[in-house]
Figure 1 (spheres, one colour):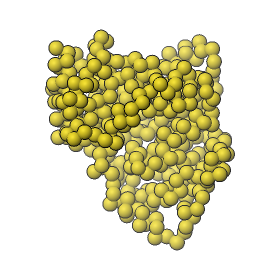
Figure 2 (cartoon, helix red, strand yellow):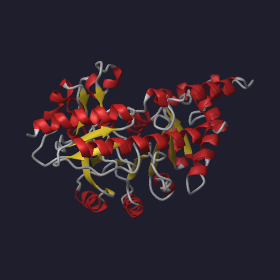
Figure 3 (cartoon, one colour):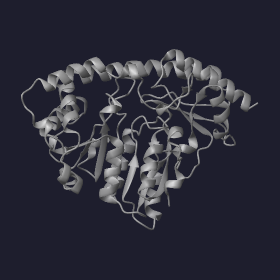
Figure 4 (cartoon, one colour):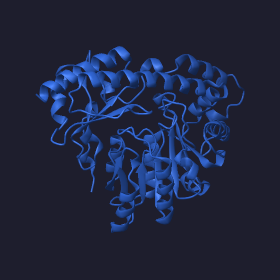
Length: 392
């Protein structure tokens, strides 16, 4: 069973953006640069929202999110998804972390079994540990979650899992994307086993090309499925705003939660600002800008890593998202590199952070989201120098 002691306890170790040492280039940071946060556009959206006489967004909100915001969000998603999205399929959240915690509160009890990927988002693992859930992992390969292993796992488990947590697009940390064929097989297996599928789709809009990708949310009527979306990755994490797309019956259960019946819907004021941000066409423009910036940063970091890392290191260039997942020979433990790296003002996240079993020690996660090209170039050089020396 996973518990709190399995997760690193030093908050500054996990979230060093709170207090980075001077000159440190932390290539583990998975968040946008401050200069990518659209302050002027947000001012414009706020002025637009606050210029209206309607004051409904200053009151307690509707439990599942204010209707006008869900309608605007549904229209935005419909423009970008292959199928139309109905407002009644949407439930507004305070972002993905709150959404995951909310799902655990509603659907699990301590000791329940939850399936996770190996590797998986390390702070999701922390949330599951907080709820004292028993985690069982299913491996990920270059095409995403390995469905054949999932099928065997479901056949052999003694207790039925409550849900499966997956990151299907531009995975964190592995950067792989679940293929269309596997998406259909995954839905089929979840439907057959009545297994709830929790799809973390926060990177869905951050592909670095114009290739279309069917979201898992498109299958929400074919199996028990909850799709998680967030404005943290496509707008600004300080908004603490996201959404769930799922079947209206599941939304009804969520909206009946005591915390919502008491306090109303989540974040109605911020929702109104973001509503104007979408109404004014600013979100589509901003996402396009992010895709261009991240695509260029990925190119620079990938090229510099090829130059500076030793030949024993290998990685696949991602097609989207934030991350590069670097592999070393099996006998290497990347945790051993960290202290030496930090002394040279560079840092990363070791692979063991992303395994609930503390495996994957021969991997590291690097991110190109937080720094510009000059810092990425310098960071890759520092990291390569440290690792080359450590590996002899």
